[in-house]
Length: 77
Image (cartoon, rainbow, N blue to C red; front, side, top):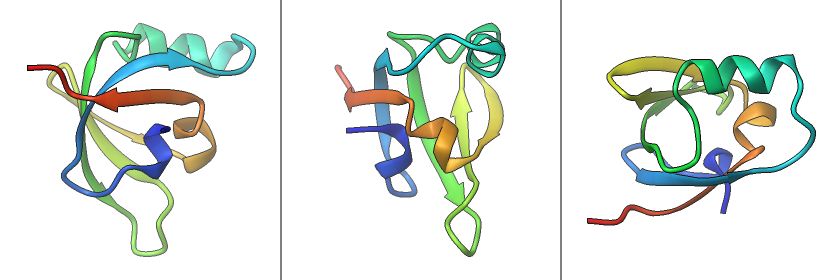
């Protein structure tokens, strides 16, 4: 499952990242979007792209192409 596939209101944990590490991915890492982090999908734009997430108290907007690089799993309690 990827972050791009999640519906509004989903709460998931980032479990991994796919693809090469480039500048965009490094920037997401710097903003706290790393494996082990809990992410809440807040909303999607009317046409589905981008999506807004809450990660470590910060709201971020990601394009679906970027969100698809993050593998997620069900949140652990």
